[in-house]
Length: 194
Image (cartoon, rainbow, N blue to C red):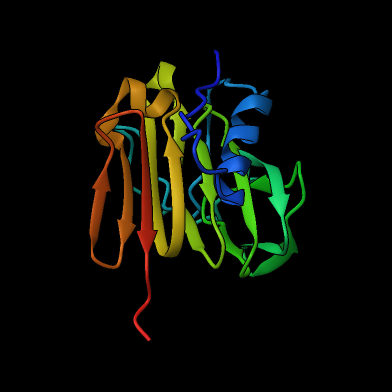
């Protein structure tokens, strides 16, 4: 699949975070194979007997822990960017995995470009807090979805396969509303009141 490169005005140089998106689009070499980011398993699950079998009490058994699979990867980083997943914070570098539930924070003057496994491109500008709440990419099973939250800062989004196959499955929440994807690209800015 060919990456989508957004048009950049020629009169002014693009900001660093948009340059990160363009570079991210150029470097998009992430495999677009069907994967689903796992939903955390519950602590216990009950097992029921097949229909017609004698009803006997069945003890709850712990559900096996699901290994978290990356749903995207950092492609470009400028300045200090941190990714927090499951309470663990790491400095973002090219190749750092991003999982469902990860929160990405850019410091003032920093930016990051992320490519998801469906080739969705996310560019975050300076002083941004962005959480990839849910992500599912298994087109053969009809499981598609991207739900994210932009708490503050800037986001430039370029659609991947999920939005092309099922646009209503992509939503970005902000403090003032929800952005539904109906096109191939959008930019959003959330300013926090002081």
